[in-house]
Amino acid sequence: MAARCFVPTFREVLSVVPTTALVTGASAGFGAAITRRLVAEGHRIIAAARRLERLESLAAELGPALLPIALDVTDRDAVLALPGSLPAGWQEVDVLVNNAGLALGASPVWETRIEDWEQMIATNNTGLVRLTRVLVPGMRERNRGHIINLSSTAGSHPYPGSDIYGASKAFVTLFSANLRADLIGTKVRVTNIEPGLCGGTEFSNVRLRSDEKAAALYEGTEPILPEDIADAVAWALARPAHLDITRIEMMPTCQADAGLAVKRGR
Image 1 (cartoon, rainbow, N blue to C red):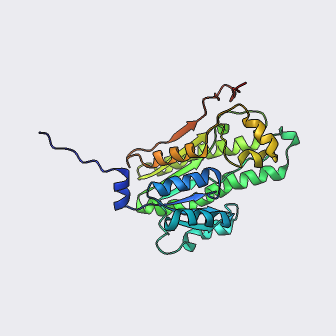
Image 2: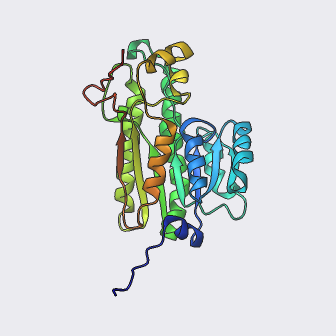
Image 3: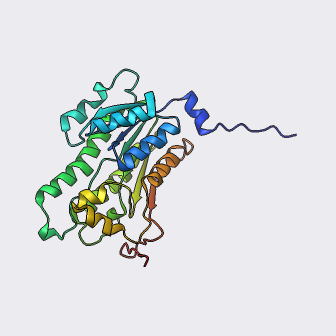
């Protein structure tokens, strides 16, 4: 009888090498779903967001595997001070999930507000690259780690009203690719996740500044849900250490990249 080859499960690997993940924008939507899923998978999570009270509720739900911290990714000083401000036992971050982001407005360029552009760039781009910059050196020194960036199909497929939001997500997609080029030969992986039409979050309510308009956007559709994003994150993390899932583009079956068409039911 041939000898059986023992292949450890992901949970068994985690029990030997515990991992610490930092998830930004963890207080709601994708971030909260990702946090719940990764805790279930055996990770310890540093849950970061501006709304500390929501994070504390999440910590009460998930227990000591979650460390809530108040963090605004647009606050330069707070981001740069983050590694040294983490408590003992939490300072070696193995996984960074750059989830914090937003869209503001869906009007053509000549009708948009400069302040909205600046806030999208500050959150979607500047905050993301600063946080990556302060955590990547430790990952590289330890020769292990995984950066997961939340981009969007809007970064690849233009549509009216996307203007700065789409451009900011295109930046995230190309930044992810260039970061992988810098890290080639190390065991630090980079994954870019690019969702299409997503529901079950505050995203469209914030973007359109109207619950009524947000509800109309999803009428007759079956969009991607936060749990689908969390599933993709968990799957990419669970791949063997030699394998990097570089890009994941996700769309619901009611959507296609032919102008990001959305088919609505009657």
